[in-house]
Amino acid sequence: MSGAQPFAQAVVLWQRQHGRHELPWQNTRDPYRVWLSEIMLQQTQVATVLGYYRRFLLRFPDVAALAAAPEDAVLAEWSGLGYYSRARNLHRAARRVVAEHGGVFPGSAEQLAQLPGIGRSTAAAIAAFCFGERVPILDANVRRVLSRFLAFEHDLARAPHERALWGLAAGLVPERAGDMPAYTQGLMDLGASVCTAREPSCAVCPLESACAARCSGEPERFPVRSRKLLRKSESWWLLFLREPGGRVWLQRRPEPGIWAGLFCAPVFADEEALLAHAARKGARQLQAWAPVRHALTHRQLLLHPVHMELGTADLLEEGGSWFAPREWPTLGLPAPIRSMLADRR
Image (cartoon, rainbow, N blue to C red; front, side, top):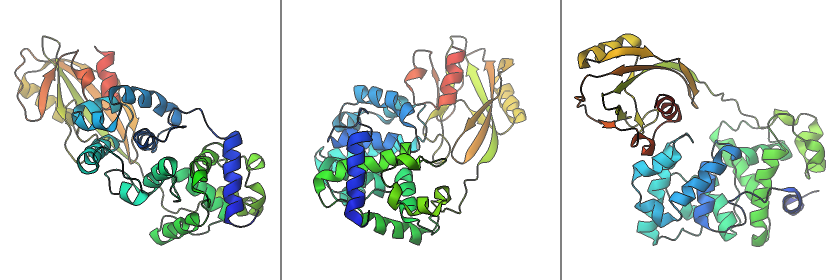
């Protein structure tokens, strides 16, 4: 195999014979459904996305329905999927599509990338799948496939090297626009199931004979990326206040920050601060629950939930409100907060 077209043809043929075809967002050219799947799949496994994707479409079947919905309703459907800025940008983008494009998605990657939350690779995926545009994608899986095939030695943590790989990727796309959906999906499938980060299955890869990293005997050395993820640890003390009628006090998290815009129990830096606040409000019947660990991209949270009751419902603080057991499930809540509330319902 040599040259761009044999590479593209090998990927297209492999995808049509061995790639994934059963996922609910495949076999459609509806940009709304493709866009939704691409956003949900960012940093989230397919198995996790499947249920959310179906439920989200039931609630918001098209871009007009999503644009017309309040943000809290969108966040509620997204609750538990994580990376909530994706949901807020999804909502903003839907409103832009309706307001500026008459409810019709722009037909090019360049235009799509102007919408909130749609980066270059996501825009290219939508354009390739839905409009057959000859543009490359470079998500994490595809970056790994291409950097190994080319034995791309440069550090992808540096922007100039990332741009260089984009240029090489552009030179590998098929000549036929009709091959773009299979080619794009094929690269994704290879990265997800064959050219994996650890122990790649080189023996069944259609690119094996021409893969420079495979020929070097060190495929796992690629991609080269010097910057490592540093995850800091934080302890949060959560005050779950209930009033005699069973309602719970929740307040919206500030923006920017962790869980921005979502509803949460009041957060304190330590137990002393939580108890002092509760005492000022007249809370009683202290009950501490078992701590919960929750990993975010850049944070490892140790959550300390504390349950207390108020003798009355008087608690007027900015950004918060009382929510009955039938009300809080409809809110945008972080997954661990939703679980804590459900366990003590």
